[in-house]
Length: 316
Image (tube, rainbow, N blue to C red):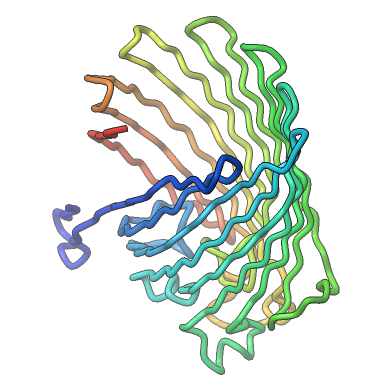
């Protein structure tokens, strides 16, 4: 439950429920089927503009992999997701998304190479003729082509890299989009000592918008985190991050003079986080986290301080 001291009209009940099942078909095929039902408050890095927004999401996702031979496997994934936002500005990005992907994976030793093609139909149900005139489409089809590689160099060091191309169309088509933009991600984990671990990530992604209003959003993100395992049950961690978002595949929006202009351009983010976790039992853990985030858009700086106390139960 979330209760405000003064703005009681924003009080709400929040929840998260994710049932799932692992499946096996013969000795070669395995996968998962997972449902998700969640309602949660959006942080300042997850909303359009400022204010309070509750995001409600319902989804059903499936992953599968069938081994062929000599380390090769066929990969197939699919999902259906519905997202609704309570804030009127964020509601412009309300969407139903159907995704399907297929590809080939090659695993040998400590390395894993995957080539994946993905198509996702994003249908925005809250965009009328006035928003269409700004270049905001009712239907956006994302075409993604990704090559990823994961390798464990030694027990203390592992890296993951991904290169991709993303394009969009406004209707289903088997042909390639006219424009394909590059994406990438790089992550590394280094156990400096048995108790200290350093994690670094950097990425450029293109996906349906969450912090801006458009047909797609380009996000640059970097994060550096350090974890100290003080005891087998207690761990301290700290991280710093920076990000940048801008719209893509929305040709008319950049030159449009309307009240939406501040949400059609770009946004910068900066954040610091520190916290501690305590494993009470193998199934129950508690955490205390403090974070400070700044959002910079149109020369306006919006800060957010957040302190979270959580109790987590994982039966498996």
